[in-house]
Image (cartoon, rainbow, N blue to C red; front, side, top):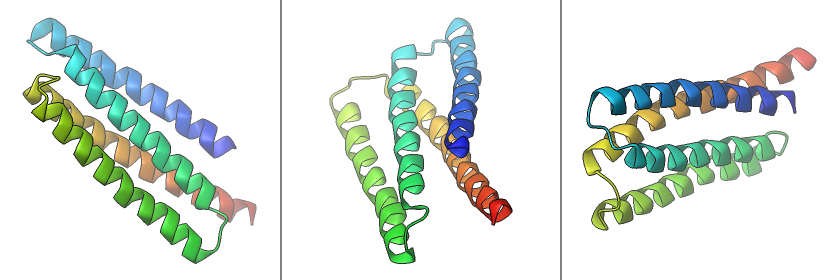
Length: 128
């Protein structure tokens, strides 16, 4: 449970930093905050679901772990692709701001998700 709490704290701190940059960009440039919010909400939810799937599969057998984690990655990517396509085709956001924000949030949150996995593995090794 401690690793989940640590992950959520790091996610919160990183989100505050990224939103500070977004507000700075909106104040100094013509950045559409709605587009940033849509990209952020998609990526934050994606990251939380990914980490929760990892937590669920962590102490399971190898076959279950592989199915849940890698199947979850594939399913999450497909859902994200469909959502991005719908959002762009329907012109719900400013496309350039959305794509830039989506890319930044994806890169940063995937790194955070991987570090969360490593932290969980390291904690299990130390307790063993």
